Image (cartoon, rainbow, N blue to C red; front, side):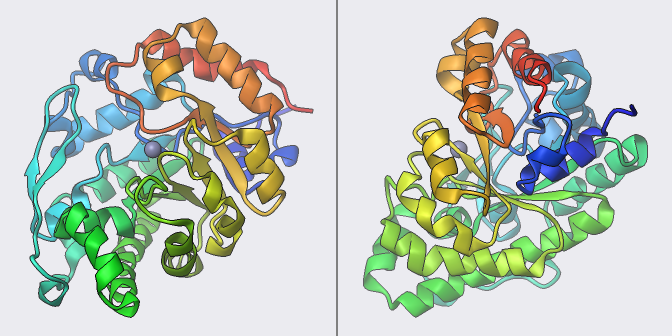
Length: 341
Ligand SMILES: [Zn+2]
């Protein structure tokens, strides 16, 4: 029998059709870059964020060095904020870029520059996706990550200030801003899909239940995510950091294909709530297993996640840059051993 391509396997698993795949996919839709990969392919942070050739080599390392069954671009969450005018702290080899200063003092100041996807580092990301598609054909899937609307709002207005506004300003105004950021996500993703991306990942780490209520999630964010889902013709993965358990009943209404969960969310419980409506991705704790554990800890986490019904084996969040290659590889090897029947 001809082996299923990692691309077809990933597309089946992310869309909740793992029973049609030969086994569970280990395509990581979150950040894959680690210091050991950067050194191995000579493409270190922060330079790899800004250069097509370096970004290509580092994205490719997810497959050539770790064995992850797909590529994911970009490596950070600041592309949108940068293009909207925020000052970026570029970090260092083991620290991701972060937003240093907000771009706007008030919602009334907020506007989106024309042709925003031609600004900042959007074109670099799209060029790398195009090059990966050219080199790897349709064998491996490419994930285009967008920074979710709530996180971008926190970047461009300042998260504390934006949180206060969510309580003080008319909710329609808050929704409108988030919808405008969703438009950027859609424009970016459409270009990525034209360049060869297969899957869209909305990474919205700040939309965590630590700072917003399930009520706000349901009434404000669900329609925003749904508007992104409805406008894109590709499988969509949503990632939210922290304990998203209280969001689970509302996730199907976002119309995303897969929900990528952090360690605080029990996979079996998530599967029970989401049923066959939304796939569940995750299962391998980034800190306790991948960063500080051993290959054996990682293997146990993979087996546990698969036995709880996970659809795609992935780290529970973006990979910590100091994660040892041996631990990251164990995620791939353990997943490959679990033939799904
Ligand atoms: Zn996360």
